[in-house]
Length: 261
Image 1 (tube, rainbow, N blue to C red):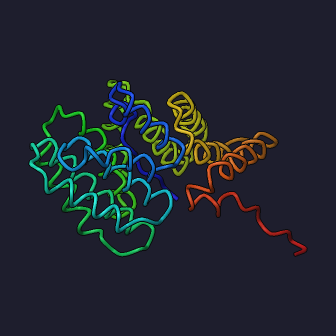
Image 2 (image 1 turned 90 degrees about the vertical axis):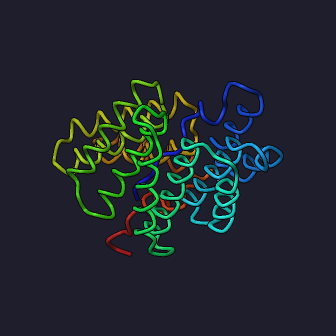
């Protein structure tokens, strides 16, 4: 299963106590609790409303649940008086939610995802901080909805360069991971190993605990034994500790059946 990027911790924390509390909960997969901390502000403050929507959309991708809550949060954010930048961010989240629903086979919303991400591209300025995340998500659409690996790689690299230049460790972890996956598909195992290792390092440094198990599993795919087994065992322990999210990782952690079974 392919992941999608979440907002960078800086967008979640903002350097304030409330923001840090939201990030701590979110990084452990407690999206509902993190969103609840924003309820009082989300009714009138667009940044809080957009962040609340982002949290609940991310929950859908990790758990495959909560679609109605995410839709409600997005509509609430969109109903506020938003700047073009904020409208672009909301459109990016709507496109991501539609992409997730399609990827997880909840409902085919690929056309909606393309349209929403197109609106985001029209609204976000070329130098907008939200451009890197938008580029990444358009790369996901190119790869997994259009089957165009070349276009996906170009979009991932734009997002990757912007994320690293801005010090966006979390988005950088996603771009490293997806570029590594493309390298692996092309048979470049050393490059894939490097990218997966960098993705894991950045997630550990950012404290994005809920995303570490998938990074461990990805790295295990390109490591020899016994290191591969050690990484999968570590991923399994963390997966169980955090309430078995992301849900889609379960199939990758299940050992193959014995030939004698």
